[in-house]
Image 1: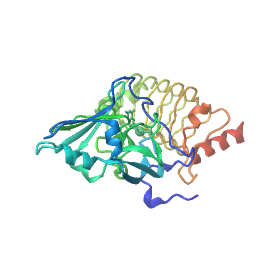
Image 2: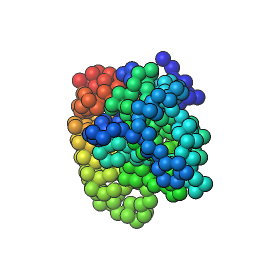
Image 3: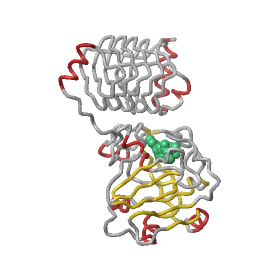
Length: 342
Ligand SMILES: Nc1nc2c(c(=O)[nH]1)N[C@H]1C(S)=C(S)[C@@H](COP(=O)(O)O)O[C@H]1N2
Ligand SMILES: [Mo]
């Protein structure tokens, strides 16, 4: 099967199996006996508190979207049905001061995300009850979730409970802590905000070969010699190590989602217990790299067309559950390389 390039945002690749798409983030709503109400609050002329069952009765609209997850997988042509957000807003009537819209989940951590109100309107966001003609399953946000076309999927919260109209922005759960980009446009690759590390600090970390336990969002170590570096327990989302030398480096328990290791020499690196969702290892030398107990959801070990693959052998260790969360092309590539060398 070929990938329709004009439909595929940069840095994404197609997920074909399983027939559904992976569960990401939280997998269940808060345990709560109170009836499920959908609330529209804040800067509105008519605050609403509607029982979920009543809203569902109005659900008629069907949309077909391409899902783009920030961890680099995309799934085309998913059919959702529900109630257009714009219909609800027409009922609640945002005031002239309402500039942002925030969605809050009925989940343990009151998971949330926000968008400029005009943007949410123009994207035709949907309050969805069904996917592929079936009620949404609980892990995928059932009974009710947002589906916001045209943005990475973290802008589509599961288990919708409250819609708050605001005068000011409030960063959501993934945006505030982990530094996910607030605009989240997949066509502009707005995955993460980039860090701001002073150059002298960066140089000191290179000289000492040590940045363990540090929080270094988006730091760029491309082309550096970091042989044996201690990067254990660091948070280095979206960092760049392209063509760097990382032989025998320790990334134990490190969080490096979205980081790029293209062409890096990582022979013997220790990645145990780490998390690298959406990381890019194309062309890297991964012989004897230990990914035991490590997550690599949606990571890239070769390009979408199978070229520029990482060097992997039987001594490159992965968990089966981690490989199961790769795109088909990547999983097949890794399994072939490990099998061929084992
Ligand atoms: N309540 C809630 N909604 C959420 C999340 C979450 O952790 N909690 N994760 C977001 C992210 S990062 C993604 S990619 C999608 C995943 O939806 P899925 O589990 O149906 O794939 O849900 C989004 N909505
Ligand atoms: Mo995500």
